[in-house]
Image (cartoon, rainbow, N blue to C red):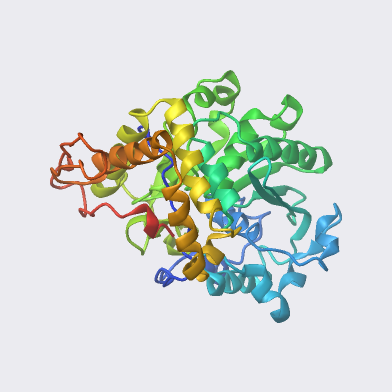
Length: 417
């Protein structure tokens, strides 16, 4: 187990048109196709958790009314060809998610699961994107699954807000959801998520009431962003740290975001760079993830660079940067990054017009933050006066010791998968 250094939430939205990561020879799909023992024989593992965390990504249609009740619906009823497009629309790997659903409903381990209490909420006023479901397991236990960030602009704005807010709206909503799920559950309670969903799972497990906390068997964060210093220093977090199991790929960027980190273990992936965020690229040997010896040298350099960037800004500067950046995205007139990309002939001019209307102070905050980010990440010595008149910066070379493993060049956050 390791404790990571501090980093920052400078991410870019998942591209809606990209080549999926190569299918791992042994990943969570092949795991489901080859491992048939029930949960009563072999308990819930972190591999199982990643499978169940991905279930919350499915966008259930309005006609799936039973899934929105406590009684729920059999998960096998989701596997309908006429639902596939809607279930996965705009997500990071629609074909992979359909394959995963097929493997789940065919698996003796999971095919009797009931999907219950599904919610999906977007609140533009509160800058909140939240979705969750409760999976009733054949053992009588439940797994509360929190969705990661979708492709909405407001969802990504909430993620960026974590840079300067100790408790964003989705974290508060996750606590309330978990407490209600535990109140209704008969057996033990597991909670988990991938990406932002992992952050929500860890936060809810740490900040829930004592009655709920006593019911939690484990909380899983799969490459979920970290937390503010205030959160990790709280008594509630310290009391809950032993419950939280965090896994990140060897070249993790998303899971290393924010200033402070939980303990974590590292897994091998068939992909490279930030594309290792894709859960289908995580390698499974038998019933366990293939473990790696720490982060790669390139990822460690990138994460430390991002830490330098966020540490160089005050909380007020972070807030100003995020607000200014997203005011430009909102000027596109679209609600999702997919639509922003698809309608680029109108959105790009609208965004450029918004930039031209920024006052000197707003433009200064934006260019200053970009310059600091470049200062933290570009592995060379270059002048940055083009970004900030009157300022140049010396950019250090990555401090990577030979023998640390494959040396990876830092990957632009815009390539995040």
